[in-house]
Length: 377
Image 1 (tube, one colour):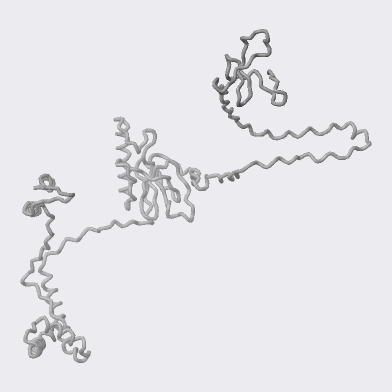
Image 2: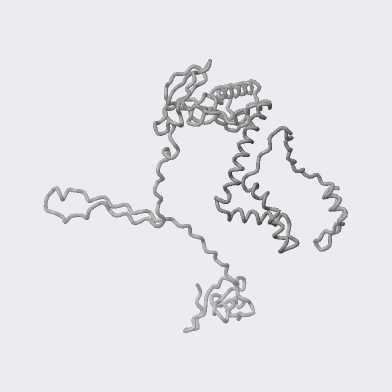
């Protein structure tokens, strides 16, 4: 039963999952575990000589029983392990002279063992030699160019590393032949991809993914190139020699400019703030002289003043005039039409402005407080 199946039927109360312990136990017991690797014990040849004891074990073998009896007299529960610990402590406290007889006996036993071991080894089959775990790289090696290649071009290097079919950079090879075989394999894969129109994204259909091999201080490195570069003396280990696919000469191209050198210095940042007023480059006019040349010299052209920044003016919203209430007005006659008794005006008592009956918004006149005369606009 899986954990998902156990939890599916479990009860959840206030965020706490209640699962029967018997189901959990069965699930844990059925869960596959990675077994511990058991160490395979070498089968021992019964005729193989056994390694002899050293000086300490020779002395301990003769003294451990006496030490155990001594400990039991003081503590009946003393064990053999207690006697072994006590024997180790006493051996450390012994002088070299006290240890000398046991050291000599151990040396004789070791000499006898070595002779017997050598005789026994002659009867055993030879063990196969292990292949060298690491391929050695000869930095002084300078192989000839294989068929269809050019080189070696000493103290020359090719630019940029090669990416394999998987898109990962190709590792440096310790063997020149391995590097050539790998380059041939990559070029064959590129040709096949080009013919089938299934070109990997990290390759280009116009440029071969490998132009040759550059020998460095650590091995043979596949490079994209395609041009040869001269190796500087201080960087000799980065380009001891190069081999190129196809027929090439040792024509050297100019190394690409490093990004740090190619960058132009940043322009100084402009300071924020108002621009200072331009100072007039024209010196102040000299006092007039009496010479005719001075009289005919035209005055200097007036300096053009810097244009002021134009600001947008937001039009102010004009509120529409409000009319007066007719109940706050008094009906008066219109003196302009004395013959017409029906001609009437409305006098607003608070503002003392006069309105016509048809327009209570725009006044037609006002009352002069000093003369109490009606003044029309």
